[in-house]
Length: 450
Image 1: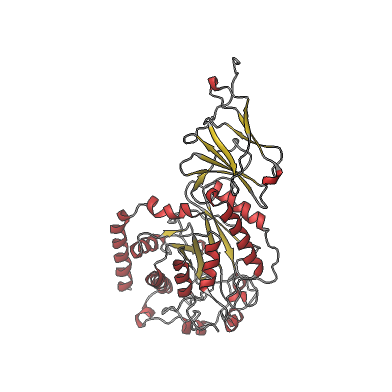
Image 2: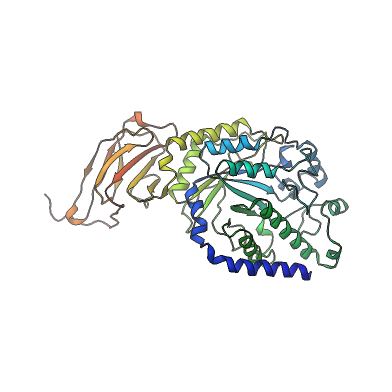
């Protein structure tokens, strides 16, 4: 136990000496620029098509039967390079994959657990290392999903379902002195060791924690974990699911109505399931996925779009098709995705907007097919040009009801013929002189006319 405490203290002290080397804003910059990421949930649960880990938690399957799925988790057609090339082609900047879900299955070859893809699945090999290499070789950032809770660890609690304790002990070998520690101390030691192993092996750019709700921050302990991660990689960023010690918000499934007050991403499934679930055919349309991406970036966030590969390592056609559809739209409208910041406040345009980083171009996103004209209000700057993104077709416009002597800029009516419509979301670029200046007044009498 003394060795464990000394290790934790040493990690914390080292981290504190490194904090000054990289400020929060510096660490977060790549993430704020990223816009689109791919989330991957891959594990035993795809074999029977059941909910990942939760099927055990809710006792819809026994622990023993859940683990037997490993016998058919073959990864025989897994091609990490093919995956990475697909993700890169759609404009993704980072990829997050489950290294270990709540069920305890590690996809890498862990020396702290025999419950891993090499020792406890038909795949019989490390599945994580090829993934990390392929993602980095294709110029994307690596995100590691890691569950803080481990429902198969013999010393973890609380557990809601019966388990074979004898079998568990064989899967999680422990040192001779650990028998003198409390169960929770043994689990903390194990947890820190696996996290350190992931950093030694992969030095991730991002850690996507999950399961933090099962214990308080001082029980994990969250502060020690965060300090340790920064000591292992001073550039790493962490999602919000490390009680009070995350760097960015992680809303799930539904886009937030109001944007969080710090960097954020929306994680969202394509259907209703995170892992591969062959009977779940309730897929969201490609148009809706593009609209969700637009809604996220217009509020300064990212979209982390999930897929669940099959047990053999292939990606279902329904999921691949949607990735490709989103990718085609991103490629066509890349200037209105990457290199943008959150758009105008509500009321200036009745739809999502973003701004170029220098704030001299306003991007207007139209979810419906254009008809007659599109309206932009309250922009003081002189307009230089208005065009359709993706085709550069110039659009005619006029300004009505302006009163410049009263600082009322008027209403811009942009003529938008139906033939400019994109299949999913039409984007109009309004180029202005200088950084955008907005009229935010409540309105008043004009008092005089020309």
